[in-house]
Image (tube, rainbow, N blue to C red; front, side, top):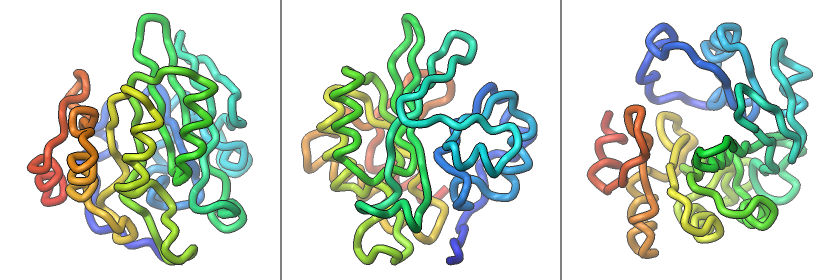
Length: 223
């Protein structure tokens, strides 16, 4: 099944700068790890992903759900994720999320390509409060499971946000590929209708996340 890329990266490999750790949701789909990304992994000291990815790629450390790996004082824990509806693993393969914790720092949840709100609820029940949640959204859909999406859509992202309590929500992985079937603008609007706009943010130049507005979403889509 072909995936069609619509835009190039904002920065080239030499412009990104030094990367300490790569958190790789999975390796089997090019929207998560394309050819250039595979070459780039050789520059990184620590790459964490699924056990399946570790079996396929040199230099990758695989994490089972709830397994923890420490990097320079940061605890990185693999978290359950499901890339589609119940039973999707047979076709979509294994994926993982991540939890990052360090003394005196916010607790960060990175969902990976997870479409299951119930798994988010299980993570919160087990982990407790989360400060920042990076949610892979965009309603990725290649038609493999009919109308069931492979990642969170705007509606299920709102459900995940509610499960995450007061966490700041940073939506990512929602543009640049044809199979992302919803825009960021749609997601922002869904959060507005749900009364959760104050929870929605975008990553911002080395500082804390800042509020994400509908004009932001339009600019992201255009640029």
